Image (cartoon, rainbow, N blue to C red):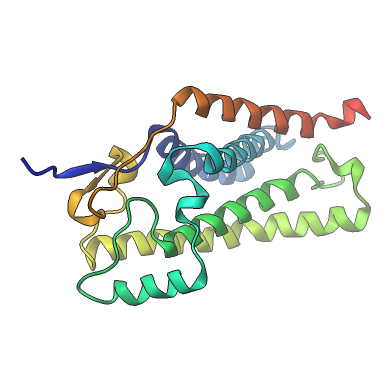
Length: 225
């Protein structure tokens, strides 16, 4: 019997994706409706940084479709894929296509930058990021401006990401959303012979614990100086 679905995404990668979506939404809500000291917003930011650091580690040692070495391509590959996407026989990929991979990298960089700037942000009244004491007043002012603007830049790329997903769904007839929920892709959209090579969930938990430790140390570094 012909296999209809091929495993493509492991559980840690899917959990990362949807937890990040939830935390970004929470970041906005805790900013707009949280307490005046921004306690919940700051904890939300720490969680986002932890999750993104985890994704960097998982991108080095995780399952094959999560590894940067498997999906980061050069400009030529990106252009070639975009050209093929306009034809009736687009290139097939088990994991991210080259254009999608570029979006992953851009969003990761923006979100890590956004979270990092938050560590240096203050309103000079009630709210002060944990690393403000390490920076000059000029840098703190710049970090605050970048942190405010950065959210809307991220939202712009998120909107582009969502539009692309729906373009593939309704125009190219390829569902990219469902596999990030179920973990499986339609067999006809995957190169023959390719399949997921999952790593242990325990390894993912170790990566998450290391990431949480790094963020905890960073936000508490003042206690050690």
